[in-house]
Image (cartoon, rainbow, N blue to C red; front, side, top):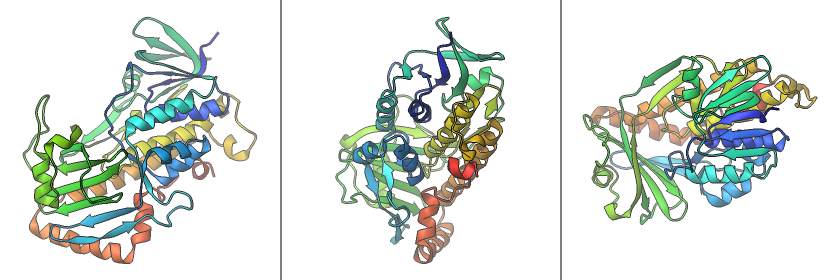
Length: 394
């Protein structure tokens, strides 16, 4: 007897959303997570309107919106003055904003949602080393020697997926030169619920509101400054003061981290009965907040693909088109588009120098004056090609 219809490796946002979607359709789903509990790091924070549409499909849009901060505007600054404002009002009938919510809380809400379904089981402290495939199903080989079986498996185990490596699926990877340091602070500023972006000649600063009276600050590190090692630190407060003119207190830091963006993509997203989704399939610069939302869209289409493979899909012509080949083609196209946009946004924002910064400021101010609505739809991921299952299966 098999343990589940689908084994999902990884209880991050993508894997847990997939469990919600499968559970809603009565599919036996076993989610395996190697960590004992969810990480306290907040990491991704932005949830876009297309993702909120997917969450609405499993009845979680209300809890998410209640837990997060609705960011309705982004204020853009240059080295000397405000360049303009990007309003998200009117971009979506029900969700005219980008929702700011720490990833830890996202995981908590998705986990609680998945466990509403009796057919979904979540096991922590289970380290899956590889997925073995046979004609009729798959077996998850765990580090404790326990084999777990299912008809299909999904690797949603994050960047540089161990499951993909064990399966011999090649990974193409590029590391960008820009480096960033970020921290969440008790918010004593007067910036409110707006996002604020500073593009200056010495580097970029981004700031986003968070629930519970907190605010995230992200700074581009100066040239030649390495990422801090264990126990090391950078003076984020001084960089913010110099570039944005905002005074932060070191004692108000709640959490901190650093990163060097990269882009990666697996050679294939489907390997017979094994599927890859989220960061396990593709990564992109987190600047712009497109990575987690791309993983959510993976989960939506993958749910329909698995239902059809399990012969549990509906008779609707749209769902009958949800084949593994369609999943790979559509999600590769969408993730590449998102990765290109993330790279372009990061590249424009991180250019340094007096002349380049002056030209950038003029261009950004002009774009915000004449095309705020198209830009808002662009940055809220509502113009990504094949961005949802309906468009992918037309």
